[in-house]
Image 1 (cartoon, rainbow over the protein chains, first blue to last red):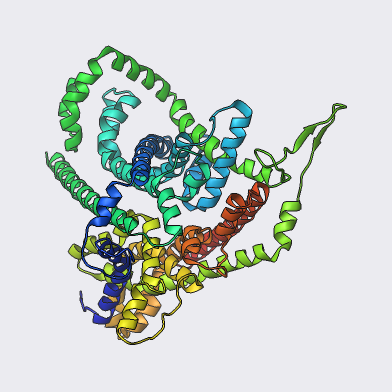
Image 2: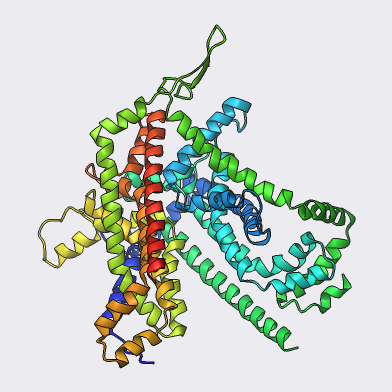
Length: 278
Length: 332
């Protein structure tokens, strides 16, 4: 096959990557700026990192966001996996089309609509049965779980349809109950999908501004809400420092997860090959 | 249980977890729970009911409530809307539907302008994304296989960093005393800063920047699995590369183009953060209008009517997309 490299196209690709990365790099660069004027270079300094570490408001909001993200990602993984199992393993059942629609709709729904509709639900529920009393952490967790489970369901579904059904069938033939087959056979095989689903749900929750703003109440201010209120007032070097920390954490996390999943996949393929040859 | 070890599980995770699982299953409460779970799941009822109940309660019913409140009156109360059903004194139940909210958003030019502006900005942003993203996806799909993973990772990585902070980054670049203006002035190309912040231009930049990966990924997926022997055959028969591209590659990548276009166009329609942080007064997008009605004016019924109108627009566009996909499928 001819592999002519077209230099113009490669230059276009590199320019595209520059477009994607220059804004992020400029955030990182100016986080080490001595000057309070974010975009005018005044010498190297890490003063914004130390002032960030003393900012109780940002630290508190970050901790709240991490807790909300962890709980809602866990719930989303459980519910999303159940949806995926229903849609891939249960054949046709009544209401399957509706479940499939309901689980993919949050992917395309504009966030302002999801946020508004959930808030109105919580208000109506509070009026009708007094629960949830007021809005705050709990309502944010429910909202994030709802939209994140759609992403988890998509990721897990593709793994479930891609896996070899004969292993499950073999266990079933040997007399294992469906629940046991799921926990002992299926779950370990789809584990990589659950991990990536968890990471995806975690980041989506950590990043969400619009839905949280609708369903939150006084006392529950997440990190994006704090960032947004600061950013509206203009540039802030502390936000640059925060952005840099987040970029570094995320980059390390994604690279590490990529390596681990890649390794697990290789081992799995090798084992599968060995199992085939014996 | 003892047979488990001999099964060709084909997965190191399952094998290494086996002793642990075996020990766990022996603990009476766990065994009891597993048995119970097994009994319920063999009826499958619970596995279906739990996610179904969750989605119905937190996704389906909320829309019905939005629809209901879009017909309510604005009240100065907590919550700020009237109830539709009244039980009057003589045992009459009256249902009041106030279509005034819809009439209001249909008559006020502000809402029309916001809808049209949202459609216009999202459409042209998707077009620009296609223009920038297609060659990128093409080069990636034709790169050597060992490079593809890295290139793909580079496209996906910005996804994982905070969207809000990536939009914030553009404020620093586009401001009057921002990086771009400072560089241009230092180079002596301009004497006065170009006003870019709080314009439509800034909103276009923000949307194209944030949604470009959504365009590249589906394009890459279709271009990568394309059968290259078709191109070779065409070129062997004397077809010029450009013509081969126009008659073979482009039509075959049509599903990717449609998918990428709608992945940019539909979410951009309801965008709030980008027009709010980068846009000016002329950049009224419908997501921002809804936000302002809700948070600034506390007009919950109007906000609900705007949401229903926006939802209808999204549904129309999505059915158009399905129709296009089916036509593209039929044409192949």
